[in-house]
Image 1 (cartoon, helix red, strand yellow):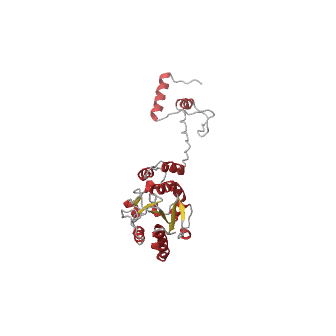
Image 2 (cartoon, one colour):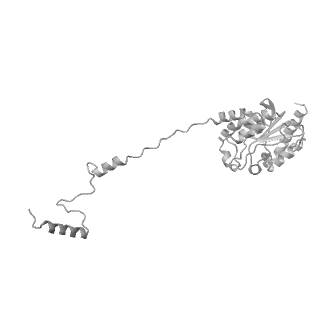
Image 3 (cartoon, one colour):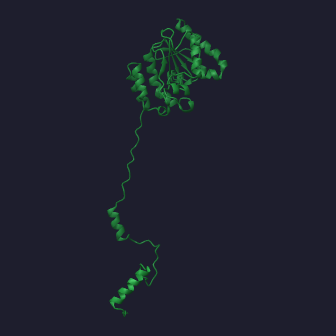
Length: 266
């Protein structure tokens, strides 16, 4: 059917509809806008060519590090105590290092006849950077003084050299974990070899596990063992003695055994 409008009238009518806001033509049949088209519109296909899907990032597998082997390598390379301190302080595979305030290496006289190995720094030790300086350290000093030893002494016979299995404080003073002890064992063994004591006192379960490979200090205490070619006396940790004063009797017996050994007895 032909329209009676000329092209000028049709154009004016179309512009009038556009001015009213009409943006599409009304068809004879309704259009369902929710139906998916069988093929993407040309504009979308072109956009897909212009903007390809970004490549997925590659997943790089984590390399597992044998921390014990790394510790063994670092410890073996230390020719003296200063080098061992530097190697241990630079060891990056122990997470405790990231939460501790200070690195705690040792105190007392290097080369003394007696070496004491504790478990780990506590709050006071972490603040001062020295082992056994809190209440447990004060008790240790009194225990050693009872058999004529002191960390302040200059003479080898009266001096004592003190360290811990872990050089960094565990959070909330928790007990050292088995993995941490295994990681530090090469450093502890090298520490003993370089310090060259005549007697080693290991205090607490973690020290027994690191030096002797065994736990159960209440069972082991009072009996001599050997590690790195040196006689070892397991003893209860001073912190345990502060909580259990009745156990000081056994600790005194252990100290007398150490004194007898230093005097040439067995």
